[in-house]
Image 1 (cartoon, rainbow, N blue to C red):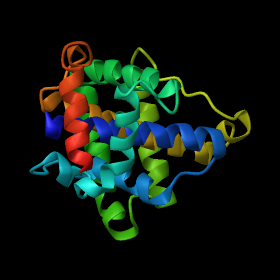
Image 2: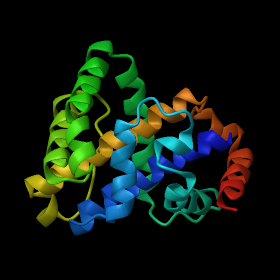
Image 3: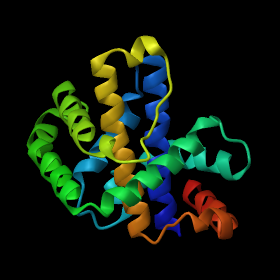
Amino acid sequence: MSERVLALAGLAQALAQVRRIADTGQANESVLATSLDSIFRIDADTAATVYGGRENLRPGLMLLRDYFGGQPRDEQLPRLALAVMQLERRFVQDDDMAHKVQRGIQAQSDAARQNGSTHPDVLAALGSLYAETLSHLRPRVLVQGNPHYLGQPAVVAEVRAVLLAAVRSAVLWRQLGGSLWDFLLRRRDMAAAVESQLR
């Protein structure tokens, strides 16, 4: 369960950045890097390694603590998370799309290593990859925000790139045994695992 909540924290903090970018046009650079770096860490040994260490997931763990405590900071985040989890189910069942996404990520791995995953060219490429693949699946993940920013191509590309990171976390969560039943049947266990990771 402890590994599983780390993946869920990765999902939560990626989506919190999606919301922030859509509202303000700006991300938290370090949190953004954690999310985008996770896209390129395909064969990591542990969930923590995917995100560069457990300490990088503190923002997401805090969001989960608030959620399980009945005090979500953003009412839209749980809805976004559910949409991404549903999207992940469609995605992993589409072998052709999964291979296309994998090839697209590999094509950017050198650039991400040399220039950083938050470099504008890498963001644009990941955003395009999402637009060409996952955005065609249903249900679509609908992001609300400030129309001024959501009318800017660079902001839209960044939102899509971070949504790709959110799907990466959803895939990892499922691989670690997570399911939507956890939220109904194992909520207390998940809350306890979050508290344990925050200590």
